[in-house]
Amino acid sequence: MRVSFQQVMALLRIALGFILLWAFFDKLFGLGFATPLEKSWLAGASPTYGFLKFGATGMFGQYFQSLAGNQFIDLLFMSGLLLIGLSLLLGIGIRIATYSGSLLFLLMWLALVPSKNNPLLDEHIIYVLVLWAVYKSDAGSVFGFGKKWKQIKFVKDNPILQ
Image (cartoon, rainbow, N blue to C red; front, side):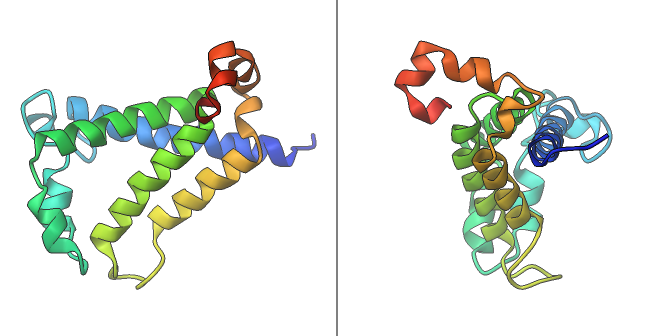
């Protein structure tokens, strides 16, 4: 069995979508992996507080720490995890998922730079590169609904939604 480049990119797309959706549901419900039940968003806890307050230690750490517990930031973050994750998993809206996902990951990277392991590069930058490779390879059309999505008139009229 021969696997094409586009199929590999589609699998990367699905895997990254699953990572984002898992983070969303773990933070929403407190599934007990990264987020215990009592620190779930549904229990009233902030899904960004721990990372921003204690994890943001880079040169911009003080700024990101000041955002910890902000309900608007929580809403933006959780919406991003859900919508970007769904987009990647379904193969629709890959362009806007690439732009918004790149922004999300770059902001997370900025909160950590320089990181403890590597002063410039970490998984957030790798995720940005994966997003752009997925977008440029049209991986939403493989193992997803990308082809049909792009045929919708509203999507054709608004290319950012492709």
